[in-house]
Image 1 (tube, rainbow, N blue to C red):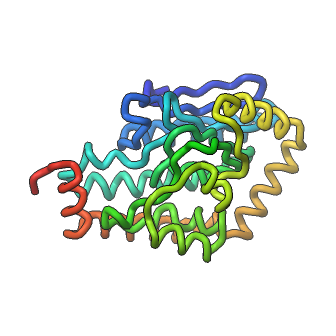
Image 2: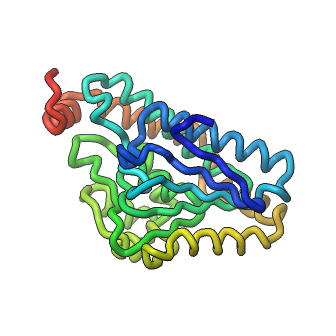
Length: 255
């Protein structure tokens, strides 16, 4: 495994942990690819022996789950930004299609693409003081990659309000809006997630896998063309003058 992601399996509970704590687990291309590789391995293990791979926890090392795309690192390279968006879209699809339940363990910040990783999971645990949301429009960016998953999570009306307004919200507000399925005290977050994963692991593995496949078919999660189109829309906007001007001003990068 890449040093950017750790992967472990304890009693059938797989934990995939983003390991870039000094950058609040901001999504560089290397980190996105490392997450994708870990998810691929989890999927292969589950397909080989679903009785030994029963649930996946997606977590972030340190104070934050994931602070979003690492735009500072690629502020002067729109093409790199676009490729990161396409890669993030592919990773999101892979997470959604795992045959096992997935749980996001969200402490600190889950912003933009980080919040996208949160809502693409089947369940999400967070705490009242966390910082969640999609501030993309504030930067002149279209949040098209995350939009399909958010619409499926909270409904089109709530997603419209959230994405057009931009900004962020507290964990308690995010829970009320449907971003998180569970709200617990920060000190109990890890324990609550593990206990819930262990409960899920007691269910019928094949019944859960079949239910996930059927839910994915019903809600459009199997639509590769839509996911690809979202990545393309976001990539086109992020390369435009509006987004580039705002991003470069934010990070002090000369054009």
